[in-house]
Image (cartoon, rainbow, N blue to C red; front, side, top):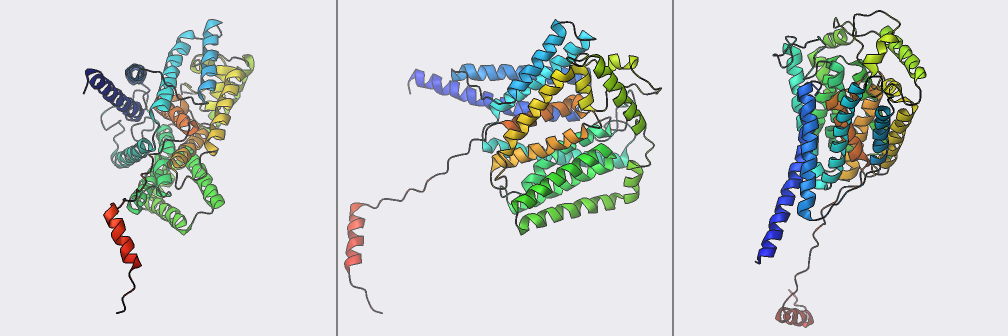
Length: 453
C-alpha cells in the first residue's frame, strides 16, 4: 500500500470516528438534560451550551478530514434563522426591556439551533435511527422506573439528596411534576410506535408496549393534569391514524394489551392515591384563577408592544408592573408558552413560530404513510405524536422554557422534517454459474429417457 493510500485510509477512519462521536454526543447531551434537574441551573445550562459548541467543532473537524463541506438542508432551518434575526433586531434597535436576559436566552437558543443542525447532519441512516430508538426507549423505561420508586419512597428531595431551593412538586429528576410529564410525552411515542410496527420481533414489540405503558402510568401518577390531557391527545391521534389506515387484528390486540397494562398499573398502585394526587393534592400550585389572571395581564403586555415584543426572556422582569392580583408566588413564566412567545417576541415572532409548525407538519405528514414497515415513517410518527402532545401541554404550562425539554423538542422537530433515512442496499442473490462440464452433463441427463420404476 502506498503512503498516499495509507494516509487517505487513516483520514477516512478518523472521519468515521468523528461522525460516531458527533451522533452519540448530540443525543447523549439531550439525555443529560433531564437527569440534571431539567438543565435549569447555571452549571447544567453551561454544559448544554459548551457541549453543543464542542460538538460543532467536531463536525468542522469531520468536514476537514473528508476534504469537503457537505450540508444536509432542512426546511426548518429558514424559520429558525428568521427567529434569530428577530432576536438580533431586538438587541440592535434597543427593543429589549432587559438586554442581559435577552442575550442569555439567545445563547441558549443558539445552542438549540446548533444541536438541531448537527442532528440533521449526523442522523442519516436507518440503522442509526433503530439504535437511537432502542436507546431512548430504554432511557424512558429507566427514568419512569426511577420516578415510580421515588414516588413511593420520596423524602421531598431530588434523588433523595438535594433539597430544592424554592420548593416544588418533585417527580422523577424534575422539581416540577409538569415538566417530568412533558418529557414523558415526547418519549412515550417511541416505544409505543415501535410496538405497533413490523420493524422488530414480537418479543421486542411486546417489551416496547410494556415500557410505554409504564411511562404513561407515571404521567397519571405524577398528578400533572396538563400531562394527562397531552397523552390522551396523543393516543387519540394514534387511534384515528390506526382506524384510518385499517390496521389488522394484531395491531388492535397490541393496543388492547397496552391499555390493559396501563389500567392495571394504575389500579395496582391505587386508584384512591391517584385521585388524591390529581384532585385533592396539598402541593402548592397556582390555581386556574391565577392562570386566568396571568393570561389576561399577558395580553395587556402584548398590546403595549405588539410588533416585536418586550424582548426574548424578559417576561419575569416586565410582568410585575402589569400584575393585577396579589400572590405569594413569583411569576417567572406565563404558564402558557404561546402567550409568553407573543409577549416576548410580538406578532413577528409568533408568526415565525406558526411558519415553523406549518412547515414541520407538512413535511412530516408526507413521510408517515407506510410507518408500520418503514423506519423513516415510524420515527417521524413517533416524533410528531410527542411534539403534538407537548404543543397541547404548552397551552397550560411552560415546558418549552425548560432547557432539557426544549432541546429535545427542537431536535425532534428537525428529525421529523428531515429527508427519509438512507436504507442499506439489499444484497442481491447471484445465481452460481456452473462450470462448462457440469452444464454438459446436465444437458445430457435431460436428453435421457425417463426411467420407469
